[in-house]
Image 1 (cartoon, helix red, strand yellow):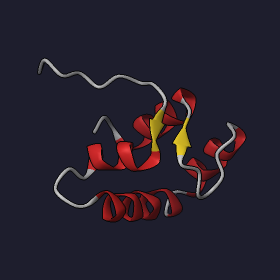
Image 2: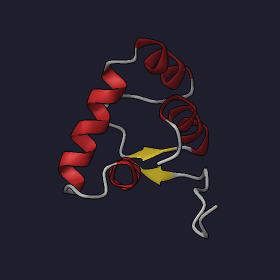
Image 3: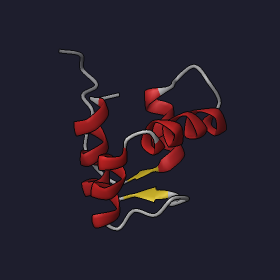
Length: 74
């Protein structure tokens, strides 16, 4: 196991996106993560039940956990 383990906490949307896509800009990473989310209808419903709205800049720890459960750890 590497020494930097992923922690579920509040993340900025772009901050989390960059963890998934470290080799592209924050803006591109955010766009790519939005595509991932928009292609997963059950995921969107689950996120929305937990307060997520498209365009949110801040993700709660619960929302981050939902994303990590869907996509795996970044």
